[in-house]
Length: 342
Image 1 (cartoon, rainbow, N blue to C red):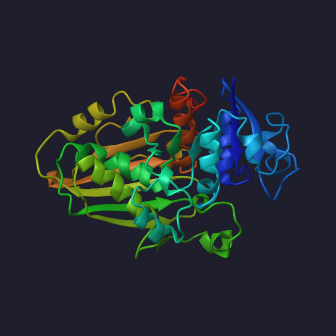
Image 2 (cartoon, rainbow, N blue to C red):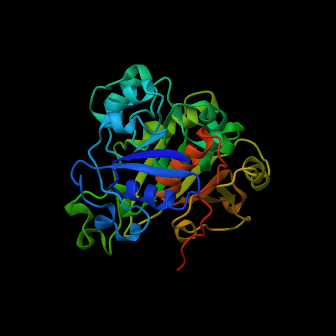
């Protein structure tokens, strides 16, 4: 059994990690930390975990965490970077679900996250944890930067077009919608049911923290800089991301066949039949990205529809997928669930 620790077990991504790891046949979750809830049984806060994790939350102590084979950080931005160097020096693998190691350009990271980086020397070592792109590097990694939710849905949707050099890279558009769980579990007036119910709005239009992450991904795939317009929206649902992506095609190819071929061997990417319209409910609770490709009226604009569960393929599920790869386990272990319907 692999001994695992979770730092930050009370947030939505933390409890989603616990839900998924409860059914993982090769994992023993030995440490679940929370500064605010230390000493309190996990099932007191999340009764769905009763009988699965009969241990209390503890303070995040490095000596205890270093006894683990792998540690997940399901913490706010800026937390993992303060503890990662000592864990790596103690031969413990780390997966950070926050943004501390996602962006390679430290000046860009500090601009968007508003703080100096605590361990800049470790950023170059971190592997960006999108298995559909970096699987081989993840196998050898000690430190994985788990992707953001919007970047996962958007990167996977654009990726085949950008890799093949088939689109104009100066006019990519990502029009994305997310459920309220993407904002985390912290109390906020803006996330109250009375505020978000029966309403729908864009946010972060002048600049969203996930934009530089998406641009980095697509620029690496293209081998050159890309220009991206990214607009996020909040919709009155709990889980799910729907990314509607627009690009201008520069060559006439069979896009359906190209996408099917690109993702043919990916266990968690489902390219739907031509003409499909994927729904967020079709991926609720599972680690899949479902997508469909359209070319309206046969014109030169390609529209890709990409949906994920922001807490699973957009966070905890992808982290478990990365863990499986890092530890040499079957990539799909603990992730074979069927989506919840209705």
